Amino acid sequence: MKKIMMALTTADKVVVRVLVAIIAVCLIVIVLTGCGKEEPTVTVIMSKPEAMQKKVITFTFGDAMSMHPMTRATMAELNLTDLWVFDYMDGQLVTDCHQLSTDDDFESPSLSMEYGTHTLYFVASRGANPTVSTDTKTITWQAVRDTFWATLQMTVAPSTGGTQSVSLNRVVGRLRISVTDVVPDGAASFVVTPATWYYGLRYDTGEAVSIQNTPISVNIPNSYIGTTNLVVNVFTISGQTTWNTDVTATLKASDNSTLGSVTIADVPIQRNHITSYCGGILSTGRRMTVSSDDEWIEDDEVTW
Image 1 (spheres, helix red, strand yellow):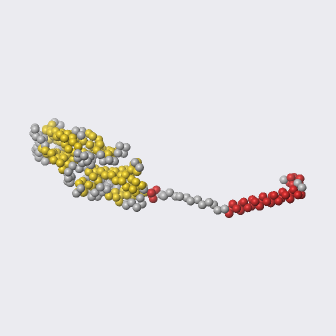
Image 2 (spheres, rainbow, N blue to C red):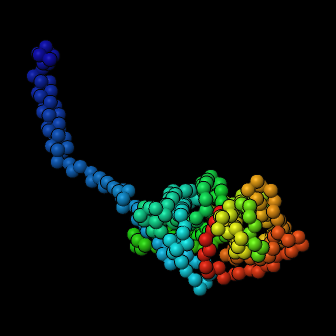
Image 3 (cartoon, rainbow, N blue to C red):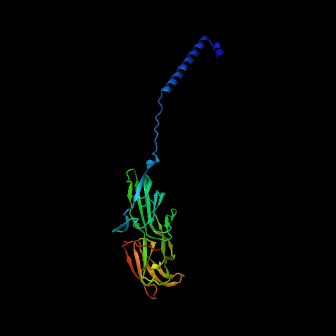
């Protein structure tokens, strides 16, 4: 740089010094302008915490177990043992809850539910050995007993009430067979074999599934020997429409031999109805009479 400056004329040196000064002033202005420039305003939109997007909803049933338009009963009064709640959003299962009668909050399950529209399905039962499949949306039982069902669609929002009441409706039919014969010595079991019997429930529609014709065997306690008060109740999942099935009732001895048998044709079964047959089973040619009770109010003890 020094050699270059020496080679320049005096006039040239003056020009160079002026240009250098101008450049220096421009740099100073740029630096000062940059320091004084305000940073752009950035608005950060924070998503609501997950806890703020959900609401805990408690579902109660209490006396809302609908058995008949004029009657109500609690789960405890009906000796129900299982309660399921299935929560769907946009057709996808988001929560499923299973409670037992031994749980402290049985009859009042609480779900943490996302804001939005939900479709819920409720099933309460005292059936034996239930099997649940969320793939097929079914519950099947080894032995069907009193069972109730409901569906509910609701939108969860900040203003949604924290407690929701649900009315459940019975989805089983009952066949009652009363034997008028004196129960003889050696009688050990009473076997009911229906041609068609439903052991499962579609929890999304309330419809009956899992058709079987398996014999249903009821052990006869010794206290019934010599009496005429042998009454057997069997349950099946049923739709609203009456359907018919043939049923064979057989009284058996401890060695599995047959003491008496009767076949009843076209037994009508309907949800929330008791179909009762009464008559002899030991005497040849005796027939059973039938009656139907569409006001299922009382709850008889089930012995099978």
